[in-house]
Structure formats: C-alpha cells, structure tokens
Length: 168
Image 1 (cartoon, rainbow, N blue to C red):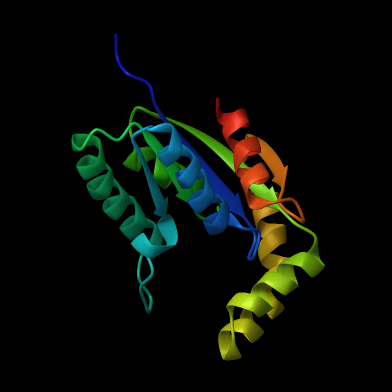
Image 2 (image 1 turned 90 degrees about the horizontal axis):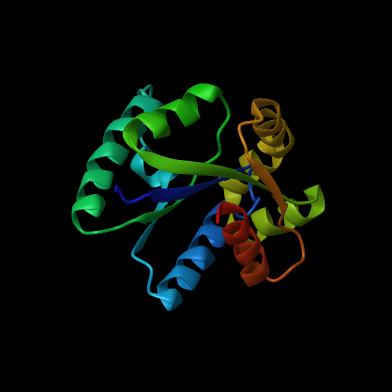
C-alpha cells in the first residue's frame, strides 16, 4: 500500500494572504507532529528579465520536492497565484503522485489595500495597488481552485484551520 502524499496550494490575488496562511498552516502541522514543508513558490522562480519563469518553477520545485521526499515529508503547503491552467500543470508535473488541493483565498478590496500598504512601499506599493484588481480578476477567471476561502477579518489561525479541514 502506497502512502498518500497531500499538498494544499493556496492561490489568490495580491494581498489575499497566501504566504501568511501557508505559514500558519505550517505552524498547525508542526504542533501536530506531521512531517511537512511550506514552500512559497514565488521564491523558486523570482528571476528576470525575460526568463521562462514557469519552466524554472517546475524544475526547481521538482528538485526541492525530491529532497523533501527523501527527508520523509508527506505534506506540502504551497503558495502562489495561479493565473493560467499551465501554471497549475507545471506544479503537478513537478510533484508526480502528490494529491494537490487548490484553495483560492479571497478578501475585500479595501482589506487587500490595507495589507499591501502595511507590507510594501515605494514603487512596489504603487505597482501592486495599480495591478491589484486585474491580478485578482485573472486568478478568478482561471478558476483553478477546488475551494474558495474568505480571508478578511477572521484570525489567521481560523482561516488556516478551515483550509486544513477542506483538504482533509
């Protein structure tokens, strides 16, 4: 009998809370003694200019997964905005045999603006504020999620627990 390896991939627009919720899920899994890894997929492909970002993501994630799997990791918590079906396909190819549940985090636009203002500054803040609505719309149009979770004003621990309950 083979061991089922599960992953939750948190997607959503800018400021939806993907990284924060992923980190909180990691804390919950840590407390329960479950072998897990939290991977912010943006960091595996942040490069430029004019690079094949998704090809690099797939290659880097496959290499990292190989190492985590050898170490006994059986649960993955992933975070990245998915804008096109090909983005999810790249993650699936990098994680063969892993059961991936995609959860889209949402929040009210004013809440997202507050989050962006608290974490970003200068040109990055200006860019994120101007891109916010279109970026969120792209994630919504992609509709790659299995579940949608509101991440507005509830404590992050509650949001993380809800995501975990959906994943099983």
